[in-house]
Length: 287
Image (cartoon, rainbow, N blue to C red; front, side, top):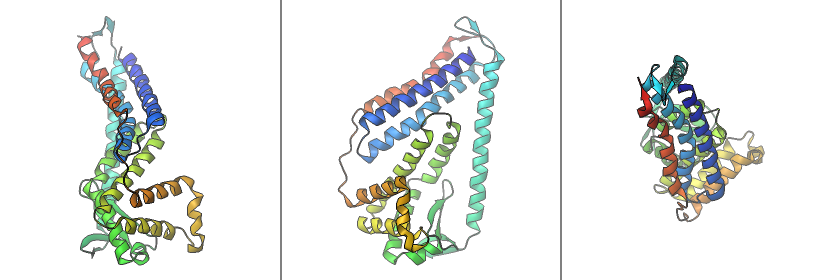
């Protein structure tokens, strides 16, 4: 019965992914908030359905009956293996994060426009928050040399938005879930969409601190400077997806924000309830 439950959980995960993907194709919201909710739900809920089943099997144990059918050690050991594998993955990712944090702390610390930053000695324009809950801002010398003072202020505002939303912390867990759910269809596409929406959210927050046009100009300047040599700046357009997303970020900054649409998103709560269905099997287990 436990093996059957796990198989049903996989089928449920695939059904949720298919259903939410169909919803995204038919009524994808135009506003940022609706897009974020629908994409995050499609990314999270299918693997969480499997996780709830694993927890239910672990709680019920390896002995007893369910609906008159016996349970065995096979399903229980499989659930234990999945739990141990998941724990091992996050321990490994945590070690990687700790190692990156050590490397960051070895970089020279300086104050840039009243913000403490770690300086990375490279000509490539780069700025990022590194760490988990208390991340640190790393800025390359190439970025400082490329941008004007005003443009640098805009880029720093964008990075401070990532710290405001604790993006490094939350995407640490989402990144682990991405690895665990690689067997589900469209996982990588949803991951890329989440990263893009994270950048849109940071842009929106930064636009409240600096002039939006200045931030848009800085995005273009960094994108061009990242392509070498400078004479080949049009090579940026060779990646159509990246070019389209850069264009959408710029358009979002210079245009009036559209009204948030939550059409049909009320169906998300039904999907959330479906994730907990495996837990309802626990009362049917007898020892």
